[in-house]
Image (cartoon, rainbow, N blue to C red; front, side, top):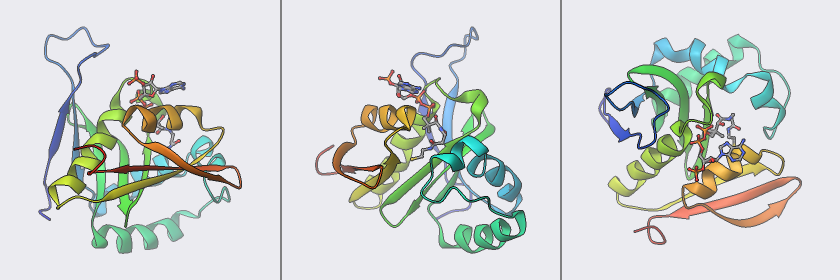
Amino acid sequence: MTAFSITTMTMSHSPSSSSTPPVVALRDAGPGDAGSVYAWNCATDVRALSGDPRPIAFADHVRWFERRVAAGSFWIVELDGAPVGTVRLDGAAISIALDGSVRGRGVGRRAIAAACGRVAQAGGGAVVAKIHVRNHSSRACFEACGFRPVAERDGFVSYQWSTWSNP
Ligand SMILES: CC(C)(COP(=O)(O)OP(=O)(O)OC[C@H]1O[C@@H](n2cnc3c(N)ncnc32)[C@H](O)[C@@H]1OP(=O)(O)O)[C@@H](O)C(=O)NCCC(=O)NCCS
């Protein structure tokens, strides 16, 4: 994977009054993104609905981040060229967190679609998301992206998407 591979998704219903439509893009995460990713992933509201809500020390985050970025499939979500969140694939499992200021504007839907597009480009496969039952915005967003609930256990719903069910 190249260091600056880009996937762009044009927003079709931008709230902006600008004549140029805003664009959602993915770029590979790099060492300079550790602080931003910590802010997005470790925001109190994000951690509260995660599988393990305990706080994460920044130093622990940085150690994990360096190792995880090196493994690939870890992207920064850009809105009109500005970093606004992160999405990654741990095997088939997708995780996403956006800055609170850009939620509800179609960015998450396009970022998830772009990540699934990378799976399709790489030859196809399945993507799964494990989402807290009360995380209504996330469930709505993944459902809007074609993910289907396949199981519910311990307060989390497992969603699945695949290239063969979404050709
Ligand atoms: C979950 C998250 C990625 C969604 O991204 P987003 O940009 O806010 O969502 P979008 O604006 O793209 O919305 C996508 C769809 O979900 C729906 N949706 C979004 N927020 C919603 C809400 N609070 N209630 C109901 N529906 C909602 C939208 O109506 C939209 O449907 P449509 O395309 O049919 O109109 C984002 O809110 C986020 O980062 N949340 C915090 C972290 C998190 O919960 N991550 C997921 C962990 S599994």
